[in-house]
Image 1: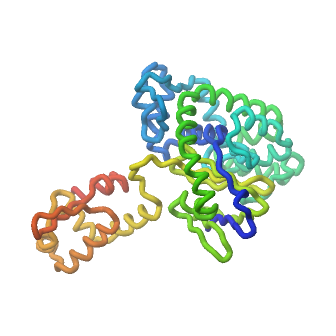
Image 2: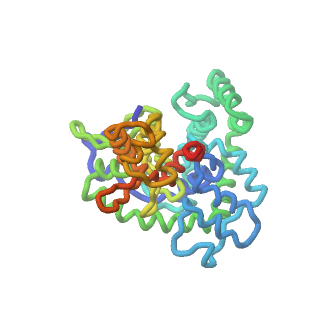
Image 3: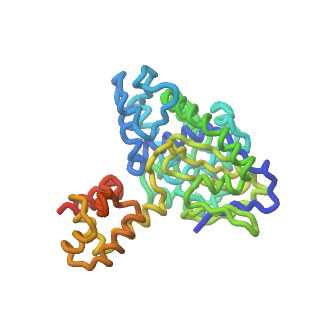
Length: 388
């Protein structure tokens, strides 16, 4: 499945770039409550739960933006009180795998302060706020509509059933939403404001990293064109002509007519590894993409998939086991494995194409060795098994 941004008839001004403090706050809260798929942010998340004044290791985890200052050079550290931690986790369904739409800009204007973005949430018509919140609690907007969930019995029961099947926290939020939506909105806005104050040191570093990226992004949109600029943001995306469009590989399907629905591109320092395209009807589309530090070796989905496919072959597993321990020449591998030299050469070529081996030359001999760190990144169990 894919999300398609159709650029036919769209002027260049229909795609813009800007910072969103609220979207970055949502990304940070997501990384904090969903550390199982944010391993690079794990130390940072743990550091938020310590009262110690010096937690430099946590604050300098790879996924935490490090701008002009850091905890290591005396900048303040973000911390969360036990009560605030509990509240953030109670509300976590709103920034889980499907984040509430209002946690992203509601207009095509970027670079607005957090207070203004929170005011937009406060001013949303109540039925729309409830609908968008219901989708987040349920975990997506692809099922039955929730546009009349306050008044329609079937929609209410559907939301409650879906929430109860997911978790107790979601069920509790669903009941609160249906019984006291205005009170729930006020509590949510209060929590977001408190969380932003508590995370201010880290969010300030994130803001500096984003501000440094925006000039290059805007220049790319202006000179390369919106289509190519958008496609360059994600390794799974492609720009296609006739008609002009950008196709993103996603778990859901959607088509956005950019000529009638403006697109705001929002960089994120906390968003990694997620690339999000939010495109609810009646609202601007928002693309949030993660900033990748220069020199980072984070492979794309396509690269990881290719490496896993390469390692599935039993013959290549035998080769990998041998060269995990020491560098060997193809002829030595053939003698040890019982394969022919052409077979060994083909396996080594596949491993090399996937970036899983290194080659060192000594005169006319080429010595192959497994790239242990890249195999470890595929899975610790896989690497351990190769050493058995």
